[in-house]
Image 1 (cartoon, helix red, strand yellow):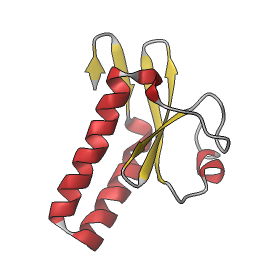
Image 2 (cartoon, helix red, strand yellow; image 1 turned 90 degrees about the horizontal axis):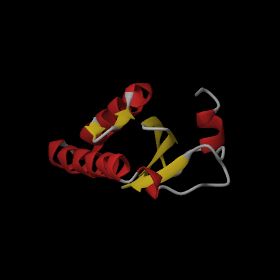
Image 3 (spheres, one colour; image 1 turned 180 degrees about the vertical axis):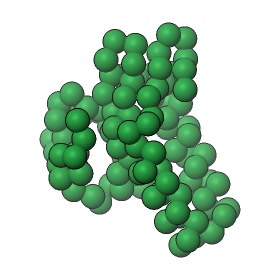
Length: 103
């Protein structure tokens, strides 16, 4: 996904998005899946247009920013004109443990 000269790099979190889609579809059905995909898409586009709109959290390294999307948190970092989306985690998850597998 690109906006102007900024790039949003999503390849690291594909499994997170697939897990969210599978869980939502299985537990809530197709209509809710479509609604939630729209919520995630809107949040990702918001990050693309306003990369520094996220906030920090005491339970994640300071290089990352967080934006809420429904019940999930999108964790990302900005380097020059690239936005690296690291994870999409449910708000109730242990972020410190979940981020320890990311580089």
